[in-house]
Amino acid sequence: MAAPITDEDRAEVRRLHAAGQSRNQIARAIGRSSSTVSKIAREEGLRFEGGARVAPATEARQLDLAEQRRQLVARLYARASANLDRVEATEYVRVELLPTGRPVRLVSDEPPAQDERHHSQAIGSYLTSAARLAEIDAGNGAGEVRSMLTDLARGLRDAFADDEGSAGEG
Image 1 (spheres, rainbow, N blue to C red):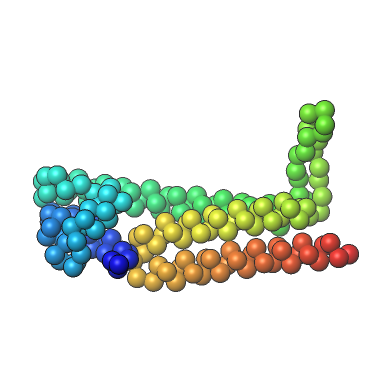
Image 2 (image 1 turned 90 degrees about the vertical axis):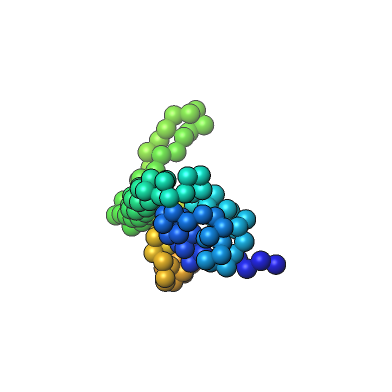
């Protein structure tokens, strides 16, 4: 069984490709098969036609994608924050549809347990996605970032689950 592809493999393929090396040259340099290099290149949106001639365009594309990832990370954090703000607000507002189809606006001090759980799941999802995008550019230690954010998301879910359990006891 072949060794799993690491973030270091991906980074090295991107770097060597940007330097204009061929698929076979990269494979030799990183000690992988050319098919593995092809797989990484395909996943990274890299092409081998033209070699050094397309290296500047490839580098520009990689920088553009990195900027897009940074913007997405910021947007994901903003969404997580907005969800948390809504759960922690002094008033929780939701709209429900009556059987007639007419919407009714409901205001309460706290969100219902189900809404709080859904917000918690959304927050966890946003943070996990942001961590995965950030780790592409982070290099070393990216796994620690993902682990920290995963632990944070798990803690939020557990806290909301505990609150839901105690709400049903009273």
